[in-house]
Image (cartoon, rainbow, N blue to C red; front, top):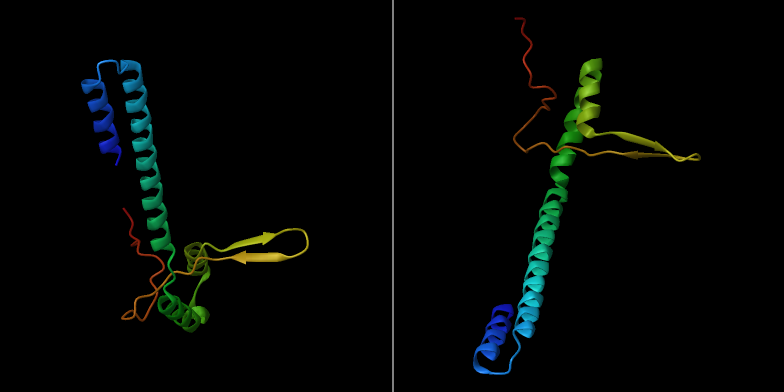
Length: 125
């Protein structure tokens, strides 16, 4: 529609002898601003859609993570606990009267039977 409006403004300028050039410039500028606004809005919507896709909950994966983590709690050392808490992005918030916990639970694929907390290999150089 914007292209049609732009073509119409050009035709009016070309075919009407008294059509002012300033009016053509104003119309073209307005159309370009609308086009830029639509492009910006489209990019924003695409970004928001991507964020929503990432935020979708994988309930079965979270359930498997909790089951596997629960089975391994007794055998975890301090460094594994620290990595687990960092992985879960645990945040405790105290607002003066009560505590709130925010957590991001990772998911585990169905075929996995263990959680790998640290993939770095130790080795001296």
